[in-house]
Amino acid sequence: QSALTQPPSASGSPGQSVTISCTGTSSDVGGSNYVSWYQHHPGKAPKLMIFDVSKRPSGVPDRFSGSKSGNTASLTVSGLQAEDEADYYCSSYVGRIYVFGTGTKVTVL
Amino acid sequence: EVHLVQSGAEVKKPGESLKISCKASGYSFTNYWIGWVRQMPGKGLEWMGIIYHHDSDTKYNPSFQGLVTISVDKSINTAYLQWITLKASDTAMYYCATTQDGSYSWPEWGQGTLVTVSS
Image 1 (tube, one colour):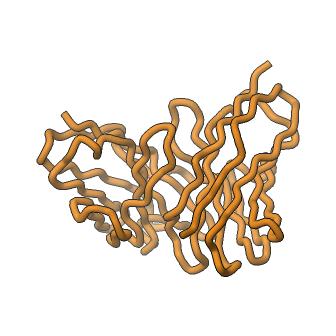
Image 2 (cartoon, chains in turn brown, cyan):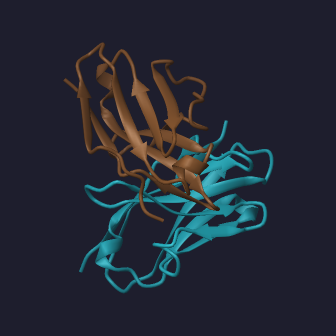
Image 3 (cartoon, one colour):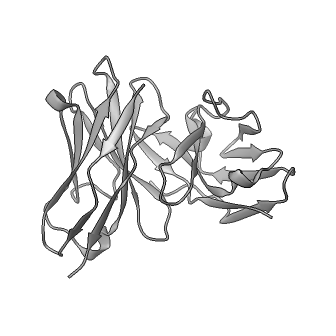
């Protein structure tokens, strides 16, 4: 099972929006309702930001939203803030195992 | 509140064995999963495998099958990740995570265990 494909980097100024894509196949992202997104500051524990494609855990700001179209899932961060600068990973449940995306470094300019 | 605490950093030599742990607290039931994730230096997150606390059902990602062993001691709510023969390429940060059965996302994570393998 190969890693899902994400752009290596994305950036935006404070207050702007950034959207990160996560591309797989019909066997993983396209065929799964279980796509989640994690924010990771290096050296710290990853944090769940979106689950089941578009649901937000309690405590996650509504600036974070998720969606899916075909084999590509997306995470949008609206109203960028300095603390949003981090690595972001998508993850999909694929036939009894999980797979991460390649990761996207989000920079707040 | 569910909480995961991982064992401390390890420095080992190639060829040595190692077992790191992840202790769960706050669960009032046994039907939950523990997963292990690797992050090699400068690289992304990789799922290694998951284990069901209730019956020790274990699923390995193909890249890690046969290279590591995931186990659980139900009596002390602790999951383990074990290597028989470490290699320098096992140098990485290892995270454990947990979720309830029926959930397919991982809301709780351990603090990470840094494993350094060097001669």
